[in-house]
Amino acid sequence: RRVPSAYMGGRRLADGAIVAEKPRWPRYLATGALLATLLATQPSHSSLLEHLESLAEHPSGLLGKLSSLASSLHASVGAESASYGLFRLGSLSGNHYLGILGTWIKLPAFAAVLPSSRRARGSAAASAASYMCTSSFEPAEQLVLLSVLLHLLWLTRPRCMVRHAVCSLDAVQRGRVWTLLTANASHAAFPHLLHNCIHLLQLGPLLHATLGCSDLLALMLTAALASSAASLLWNGVLGGRPKEGSLGASGVAMAMVAANAALYPRALVHVYGLELPAPHAALLYLVVDVVASSSGHGGGGVDASAHAGGAAVGYALARRWQRGLDLFPSF
Image 1 (spheres, helix red, strand yellow):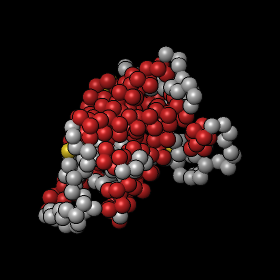
Image 2 (spheres, helix red, strand yellow):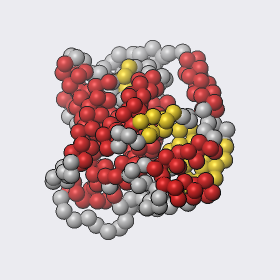
Image 3 (cartoon, rainbow, N blue to C red):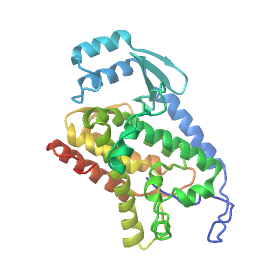
Image 4 (cartoon, helix red, strand yellow):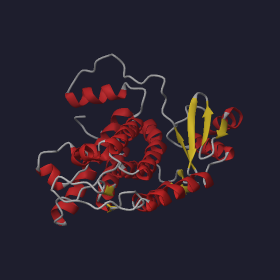
């Protein structure tokens, strides 16, 4: 989650201020560093096999009902991968995986993009959740696709995005309450987008296999609102900076990291080429969040309050589910 600064260099903002355009060479340097990092950290085929073996051993049962030994043998025989310079693509049993920055993530299935035509009954919230869960995309994948779309809008309609996809106390007081949600899918800088998408696509399938679609969707939406609320409280109310806003899916991603650590504290997680217990991975994710979110082309700081709000909600809801309680009795 980022605190945006001058995304509109050289243009007149809504309050009449003119922000001087910054030199372009830092952006070119950052792009070159990113490309070099992608090239140096491209995963190997053996790392794909290790990733699939770790999924087979994960207690969520993500890879199905086969034993971990049978799943590992199936992966070692049937898995394929090919290098494409900056990344590697792998496949197994119709599922496709992307290897990037030393990490493997499962790619969304594009066989059926539109949800089922059957109508959901019940409350509006339940109907919306049921409708979203009939899609071929899991909730985390839907957030990734929405984030990519909004990133393209940042490139073409930055003024509109500053107004409608950055959450601040000033924006909410002016009636733009939708920014409490839209900011969670908004990424102005590509490294910020890439980092959060890796988070979401890595942990989304594990939590989906454990919680199911509706509960995972409820966790993500609650984490998004909690992340925005924590940012408003810390920056706008306590900090006295009502116009300081934030954006990004880091709050939701941290909720998923914390939930995974709460549900499976002994499970191993592969993070950027490292294999760590889930609680240790949660700490590392937070550190990487700080580094990655500080490298965007627009500058700005890290909104740690939003990260903390999302992580607290993810941990609390996961512990509630662990005790056999519904995440939300009325959801």
